[in-house]
Each structure stands twice: as C-alpha cells, then as structure tokens.
Amino acid sequence: MQKNIFYFLLLIAAPLVFAQCTDKMYQTKTDEKGGTVYVGKGDQQVFYDHDDLYWFRSGFEDYKPNNDTIKELKKWKNDIYFVVFAGTWCDDTKDLVPKFYKAASEAEFTTKEVTLYLVDRDKKSADGTAQLLHIDKVPTIVVFRSGRMIGRIEETVSKPIEQVILDLVKTTW
Image (cartoon, rainbow, N blue to C red; front, side, top):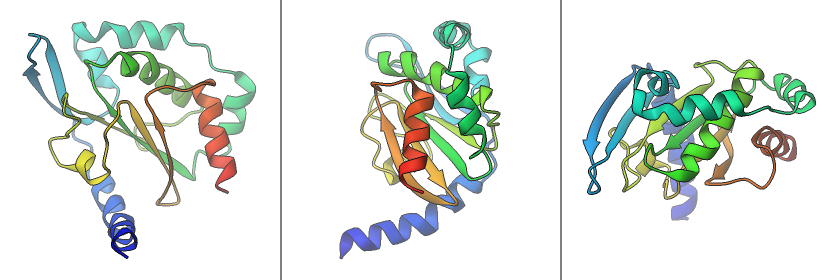
C-alpha cells in the first residue's frame, strides 16, 4: 500500500518538479580528495562552461551513434523526455553521459526534453529531486513518456545508449 501511495505521489509531483524552469544554477563543492564537484540543475552547457569538465567534450565528439537507431528514436521525440542524474566526479558519468547527449542531440532532443541534475558524492541534488526519485547510482537516466516514468538506465550499458533507450521505449509501449 505504501508503495502505491509513493508512486501516486511521484506521478503527481514529478511533472510539477520537472516543469519548473531549468535555470542553470550550479554550485561547486570541494570534495574530500580536493577535487571540484558541481551540484545543480540545468543542461549540458555546464560541461562547456568549465574547463575542468573537458572529458565531456571529448567523449561527445568521439561517440558515433548508430544512424538507424537514431532515426527510430526521432519518431518518439514528442512523447519522451529524460532526467539525467550525473556526478562530475564519477567515472561512469564521464563515460556514459557524453554518449547519451550525443545520441540525444542527433535524435534532435533539446533542452526541453532533457534535464540535467549534477549531484554530490552522496548522490543528492540541491532541490531534493534526486532524493525524491531514490537516486543511488550515477549516472541515472530516468525516461518518461507522456508524463509517466517508464524506466531507468543506471551506471553502465551493455549496448549503445541509443539502442538501450529505444528498447526501453518500445517495450513499454
């Protein structure tokens, strides 16, 4: 019963949370290793605004999504959107997030369809969204269709990211 109540509240609250404007507001923290950790909500521009996030640019440019899969994904553009939780300190984020954004870009998803939350090492976001969605792995890409969460992609993938997304969308249709 509690689980049903949680999903009901999530169904109501998530679109409200994600519909808020996506002001690009990031805070920096110094972690216990002396590194800079970015925390906040916005879009992929944060990776271009900070030289120490160079790994995103090179990962984005080097990734070559499958054209046929991208063509299929474009058909779903008006039905799905993504909420990405990432840690700038995390090796899995450094691998998967640039590939995700490259595939999303080629499938013509815009900042309206993709919201980015950068989280701290405890996987918490400043506004509580990561906690609301019980994010305990990064990166986590939450996929929504017609305002309903249809699945998550967590940490790593065994197939190209665009294929994982397409498979998820098709199997929940």
